[in-house]
Image (tube, rainbow, N blue to C red):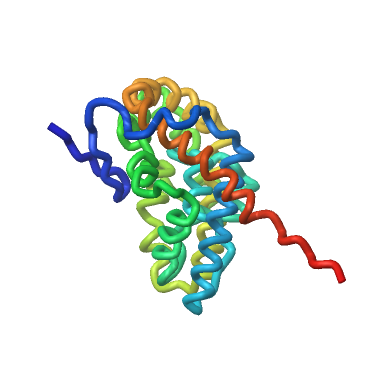
Length: 242
């Protein structure tokens, strides 16, 4: 019998066998550059949608771009954090444009939406319960206290963000996120937390990724198939000569 699992608002239905049509084209992992292309193309489509609705587009990174950076347990890129904070959700009306953009980017959006959910929550508890994580996150927390930010773990920051930014203007909220994310990343790379998390993610995530190998393959295939459309969206139109 199929069993639904809800991950970050997305329902994965666990069924035997692979997804339909998964052998249509070869599959491989996308490079960082290719993931960046998909993220930028999504951003172009979101911008068009929001402008049609009379909404201001803030040029924040799209949700896809945030996911592709793999900040599952801790932000570890100081430069990225300094520019984008946590790259959180678009303001009022924007989320509908995210879905519309993805429908325009992925011809088989229904399948992509099923297989693109983050698998990290399925093994996150094993990572954070590992003694190696607990030891190094204490070092990270000491570093954060020195920055005047008394958080015991990156997860505590995520939990506190809604209350910290509630009622603030978008610019103020973003500035606060930038400060927190930059400190989080600086302390992650300044201690052993960033390296430890990567090692633990590989160790504890391997069995889950193996279990969902067919879905990972399908997602890779669909995203590879979307690259030509994405590159087309990012190619400036030819100027007509007179």
